[in-house]
Amino acid sequence: MVTIAERLDAAYDRIAHAAKKCGRDYNDITLIAVSKKKTLEDILAAFEHGHREFAESYVQEGVEKVHQLSEHKNIVWHFIGPIQSNKSKAIAEHFSWVQSIDREKIARRLNEQRPSNMKPLQVLIQVNIDEDPNKSGCLLDEVPALAALIENCKQLNLRGLMAIPAQSADFDTQLQSFKQLSACFDRLKDQYPQLDTLSMGMSGDMDAAIAAGSTMVRIGTAIFGEREQ
Ligand SMILES: *Cc1c(COP(=O)(O)O)cnc(C)c1O
Image (cartoon, rainbow, N blue to C red; front, side, top):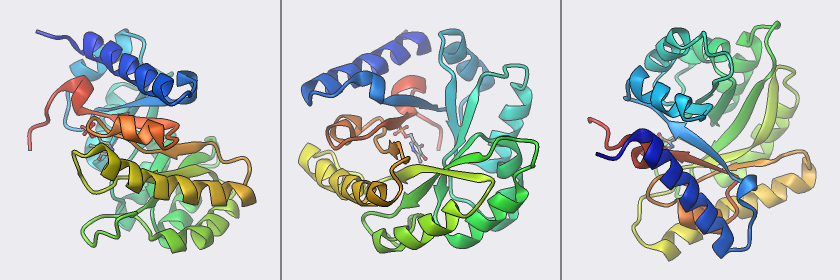
């Protein structure tokens, strides 16, 4: 059996390989281990192997895990799931990063609900690049207004963009989607040069995402194995 530690090493190797292929420095790409629907033991296996950045997609499950692992102060928790406004407070109080802001109401609520004794939330705007009506994310042309609003929020620190493109097994199709997000990120950086995070790439498409300029890949299955539905 392949262990989580071995799969984590393989994921790091894959990032290094993809970076090398397009002449990028692999140190510029952060690996986030997506632990949704996985056990505390799984998370601890990755933690004990030295991994510190984890992401959750469901509020209740994520908050429980943050509490259960609270003795490990150096874990950095990312929230990457859809956000209902009645759940925003729990997210604001428990996570370091929120990658899935897609509308003004959620940005305003997270800003108001982030406790003043905590560091500002590190946030990304989620973009629905394929304009899939079943997916979260704002449209590409809604990004500037949402970014401007977040920039005015004291308890939010805008770091960049995130997207989950339509699934495809074809590298060039994946690359085309990621390039759209990458172009949007470059335009946004003209206005906000401090932006440093382009979160794109999952187990099935991280190589294309890295080729298109990703600085953060979110990997679940390739580290923890298939999830139960
Ligand atoms: C589940 C999930 C991932 C991880 O997907 P894998 O295909 O298991 O690597 C990444 N990002 C988001 C937003 C997710 O919901």
